Amino acid sequence: MTDIIKYTKSDLFDFTVEDHIGILTLKHPPVNSFVEEMRIGISEIFEGLNNCVDVHCVIINAEGKGFSGGQDLNEMLYQRKMNINIAVTVSRITEAVYNCRVPIIAAVHGYVVGLGFAVASLCDIIIASEDAYFSFPEINVGTVGGPFWFKRIVPDKRARYYFYTAKKVPAEELYRFGAVLKITKREELMDEAMNIAKEICASYPPSVWATKQVIIEGEKEVQDVVDVSDRMRYRGNRELLAGDPNKGEMIKAKHEHRKPNYDLSFYLKNGKGDK
Image 1 (cartoon, rainbow, N blue to C red):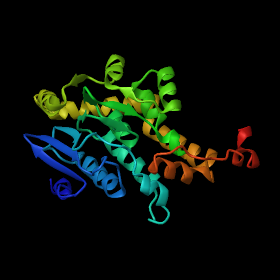
Image 2: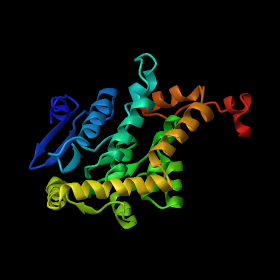
Image 3: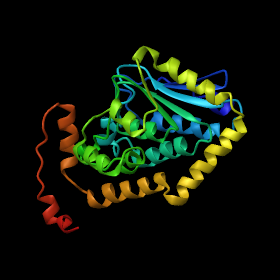
Image 4: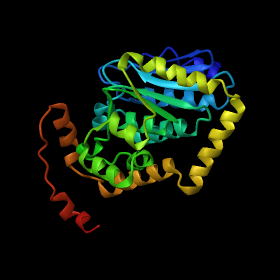
């Protein structure tokens, strides 16, 4: 397991293995926002699990007040200066989680936002604490996030409402939709996740891996959600929203806890209002 173990010492996340159960813990204060190092390192863990026979189930959890606040806003604002392309590593981490042959349980609490919500939605099972809520707030910083990930687990019309408004979805509502398997007290979340992981580990691992692989392949025959989401996010962000001068203002306003001051005339001058 050397290809996995080398990532256990990151300051941003831990990966440990206990009785064939891998435990990935996000620990990037203050809100466990995803930065480049996390996206790459976590991707390599899940890619490596496809060539590992010692890990039979994985739990993703987090330290702090919430599971994840989503994408790091500083990276979004300064990615050119930092010489990174966020879209590339977002695609990689979502593909790595979705295509991992090992069952993954997301044990979430507090805020489960943006890319954090996307990662949780691509896991096999979600369990949540009573205080958990979910949202895709990208619309409020001038970008297109992951509507196709959201629509996988929430009925279409409800998903559209939550996506267009960036409203918070309480865990109880996702439980009613069947997207969340169980809701538990915060202090019991990891115990519940471990119990489910042990149930999965009691099954014959190669049969579990094969079952997950055919589920994924069957889904892709209908719709490859990662590929569709990547292409549509590119279309939204690099074509429909390309060159929008308001994006920086919206992110700054988010940082400064104020309403943004934006000018929509850009969409008239560039003919975008006709599309």
